[in-house]
Image 1 (cartoon, one colour):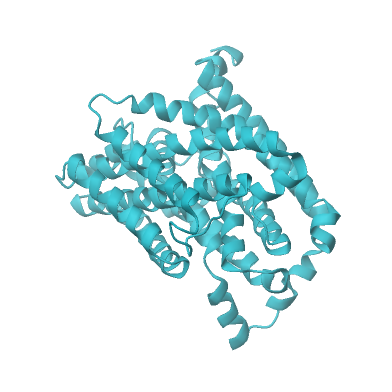
Image 2 (spheres, one colour):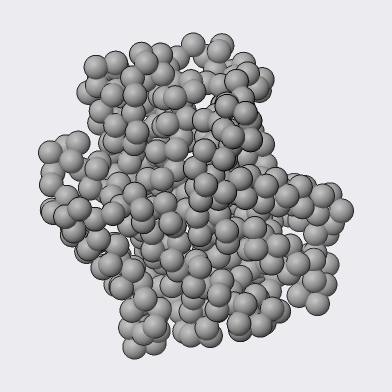
Length: 428
């Protein structure tokens, strides 16, 4: 498949093409932006607060990797009309699919718990108890997905994407030296230490997660996008990836220009928001807190939804937001159970949140390389993809991305299992 073939319909900027793009807008932008969840915002906040602008250059190669991976998922969905779980089951068998589904279920359950933790932390900054914010958040999430149609849910998600503008605004309020920001964006300038290497791995790991590939492809299929209008969907993917990275970019800049410069120690995104009050003012803190709440609530919708999508696909059950409990009972019951369990864990006194998030990230790191390899094998199968298989350039970029992500994921996982491993390897 050539790039020219894919982008041909986009060469003319006319009213029809603009309306077509707006009609197909959604899956790419939503999937990429949900990745800026509570865990993502925390990672980017800590990158800026602990290392200043020194890791900002990572945003460019990370963008390329994210676009490559998500584009392949969207293309497979448009060409085959099937979700990723469906294709894995049909091509690799039920047994492999079952193990992948179990691993992803455990990962997303832990990640969803962290989203409700983000809801609790952000609302506590406004003086609202978690015993109020978490149950209300869970009810809102449940009603939106269970009672809403795909069109309504997608519109709500797209509006939620707009709230991420809070972070660029907070970055401008922090008053960074934009000359230094521009230089740091393209010129690597950092000391190689165990902490910096671990943070680099964390930045990549939080940007590309297994659930994204499954949700992206399932959304393309449910929206009814086909290979005839795929060029517009592809543009949606690219725009979404750039939006997500731009938000991450400004989170790093905001924390680098304030918290890092002041030498303040923070451990979470909520800590970062609190630290901005004496440094920039209450408005910046409010913007950060609103952004964290929006991201957490947004992801608390999408992560359980993506889990329901890929498990029901993998096991051949009925699925879809446009259906109801009678038509797709397994789909909606699975979504409901994940929401109830995740919210309930946050309300338990002394719940081991750190351990839960830790385990989910280990499983996440172990599963991601396998998902990427499955994807590359599927997208290069001419029986499935026809003329839309990867070309030489796409394969080179994709396999390079896979190798890099696999390497970083392996190091991240080993560091989680054997803390201090990076320091010992580097002789520190």
